[in-house]
Each structure stands twice: as C-alpha cells, then as structure tokens.
Amino acid sequence: HRDLHSFPTRRSSDLDAGQRMSGRLAVRIELFPPDKRQRDIDNSIKATLDALVAAGVFEDDSQVDHLEVVRADVAKGGAAIVTVTGER
Image (cartoon, rainbow, N blue to C red; front, top):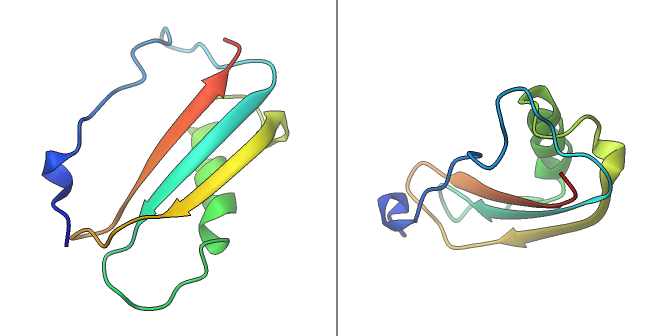
C-alpha cells in the first residue's frame, strides 16, 4: 500500500476564483484503488469529469480532446490524482 500523505499536493491556485479553463483540454486521471479487488477503470471516467465540471474547473466535458486513465498502486482509502492541461 502506498501512503498518499507522501504525494505532493497542489491546488488549483493558477485559476482565479470563478475562472474556468477554456478551449480544448487534456485530462489525465491516476486512480489509486483502496484495495486489490478487480475494478473496471472506465467506470471512474464519467464521475471524475462531471466532478471537474461541478467544481468549476472547466465548463463542459465536451472540451476534453485527450483523456488518459491510469490504474496506479493501491493506496489506503483510495484516491485519484487529476491533471488538466490546455488553454486558460
């Protein structure tokens, strides 16, 4: 198991409050499952993109032109690290 407290944390401080990313985007999702049970990683995609829209990171998931999803090591409690790049 990997301890998530060892991961560097970064906030969306590059965006001003209320500012959403615009234009075409690339999203990378690293999934850290809570245990070794078998899971379909595609089930996490829609929920993650919808959460990013709800959080105001970007306007609509139709902006995503490139999507990469990676299953990473097991981490206590599970986690996802999401990176969004593109125009601002």
